[in-house]
Figure 1 (cartoon, protein in one colour):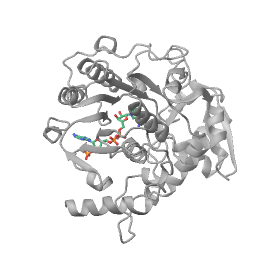
Figure 2 (figure 1 turned 45 degrees about the vertical axis):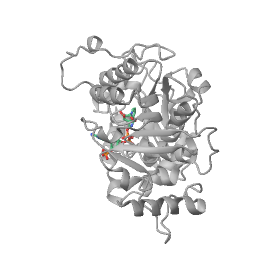
Figure 3 (figure 1 turned 45 degrees about the horizontal axis):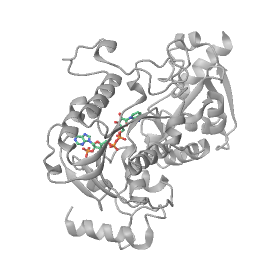
Length: 386
Ligand SMILES: NC(=O)c1ccc[n+]([C@@H]2O[C@H](COP(=O)([O-])OP(=O)(O)OC[C@H]3O[C@@H](n4cnc5c(N)ncnc54)[C@H](OP(=O)(O)O)[C@@H]3O)[C@@H](O)[C@H]2O)c1
């Protein structure tokens, strides 16, 4: 995109306060500018400015979580620069995008400096190593998006950052292996960042990130299924705990950690008191008008025999069987003290449904997670007949 067009969009985005109203940027002739993804529509409309303006470099920034992070940072008054292979111009045309490749082309970063670098876009330890080595003298703080999957042991109740993360040894993986399992890759990436920038690193470990813009449909399955009405297959007896995180709660927390220059490691799930699966499903039902009933199938053996696995076919749900008792029982006291907040479930559920119905019909009919209507009916029939 030419500089002139960028400036034009920048100017028009600022004019009229369109961003502040959450309407997304508009060109001077009133047309909506290229998207910002779901963030343009579902970010919080009004936020107070931060006490200090930061220069932030976002590695990535144009996928699922990135746009919400960038939008919140802009709303707080920060300067944001993106680094990616070029999608920045399409998603945030009025921002500076430095083009490069995490595979080794970081030349666009030369001679620049930032208060905060946010690394969204990788689960590859070598990519984190390269970026942190290059940026260690060019930034004050390096924030890496890890995952709850970095934990090798989720049996503790409550869970905290003290639980061990995967190592090559505990994962039984040869250090020369080309591809690492996701959890080990995240844990190794964390270690690389902390080794290269000791005392200046912030690690965030989100659980399942949900809400508008999520194209994995893992949480989305539930609002969509419940909104369809009828008898819904619900896993367990309703008491199994759930902790997940709205993409906006997660990304806003990250920006606040940067504003406060908070270093350390933080779990990112919620709510603080784990929500039983029944509360989750009844809470979602409350934002629909469908006539829905739940049939709780509290026999894990039956579900498994029907090919219905926790988390895979019954998304979000992971029963606290031996070894995963703490999966959804995190003590979030340190995170809440550091600024983590939680939206009401109703807001997440309603916005997720709204986002879902804004997608093309073909996409709406082909969810990427959960059970098809036919499979669900089969399992329910077998359950009633057993
Ligand atoms: N979804 C979940 O439930 C969940 C849970 C736990 C943790 N996480 C973590 O959260 C993060 C989610 O990422 P997101 O997709 O939402 O992030 P994002 O930063 O919004 O999007 C991914 C970005 O990476 C850039 N990118 C990809 N390959 C690149 C390359 N070779 N060089 C430079 N840039 C590259 C893409 O831009 P270009 O295509 O233009 O290069 C894009 O901007 C991941 O680290 C994931 O592991 C997710």
